[in-house]
Image (cartoon, rainbow, N blue to C red):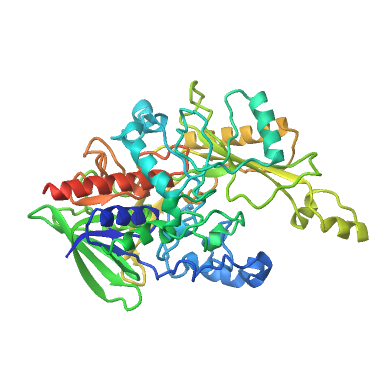
Length: 561
């Protein structure tokens, strides 16, 4: 028997495994996908022109096997094995409510492909549900999570600048990755034209410099190659494979089993404890049971709901830990579709060195001190880059020899600004199990019903208007605009299906990410989020995971679970 089973090896599961093993617990980590070897299985050493088909996946293969995954911008021939085969992993959606579910089933999960933007939530976010009455009140506030933000930032390595903004708390950052000349000009114009808006360097989990705890794990500083989505052989960006799992393995307390699809969690009604999990071998499709003193579900938002809903018993006929009927409900994502891109005049004699791995941030500025005619808000990113021959159609270049020669050099500067809008919690946006369709392992496939509401559309429209206004104010010639809310799922920030709350009647988890109904069951992936806020959520998953693991060990030692 293990002390703990952790289901899922992505950002949150990796952190739980690290924290529990370093505290002396024997941990079994289960990953439903195949093994991925750090460095060995990456293709980040290939230049774009060395990649198969210059990174493009043939149209027939993309349409057949990656109809959904191929819609996400990092998808390429160099990393297609990091994304699921959509044909082999079906799900269903409600008519007229598309959901673009982007997935990676392999050791390390989506920590290999994430955008690495690492932003703290503030009390503005933790108190939002209580203030406006949408969703369950968070059972924690910023003060509860601040030391754990500190903890995970230091280990992961987050570069950024100190700004003193209440709506985007600062951390102990590595040196920031600076703005290029056009971005600096954009920052100067925007901050002068729009008081209250700031343009700051990215807060990103790429090592702008490597400290001792990073080099001890073999991690090196970022090389500014922008090959992050193909894996990083330098370990410069934070992932489970570069950081948390190697740290856990150093303890000698970690056992990893891949190709292990968790079908359900086993519950003992007499003790009201979970005793382990049922697993289906991904290759042989044979069943197996693993036992443990506690279980952490970190399979990611939708699979965690799928596992809970499929873990039915006499004690929990609607799914494990679901006395509130909230498992699967309140599915959220940040809504994209608000952006503007344009040609930025001047600066033809300027360039930059390397390719910074993330865009700059324009932190939330709406509904901070004043109230608009909509609830919540949006965050924005902005970046400028020198275009190349691929953007030749966006500026006149003539014809003939002169045009060919001009295409050998850089084109005009391009400026992009886009927003990610917060969705309100909505119990009708949910994940259920399909009543008849099963996957190849005999499990009911997830059925997703999720669509933006009226307030969500207002927030996206406001972000769109502001993106255009800022580019225009900076003097850019807009050549592309957003077209309203994109399909939920596109931003890859799904969360909320087993959310935290103060009331067991209206939430699934308590302030320690512990199930209200079952004391030795913990959930710290995106499903635990009670609201989405405007910030990229992964850093919060990390902090919640480290904090919950700490308290779980205390509860275990005290005999409370």
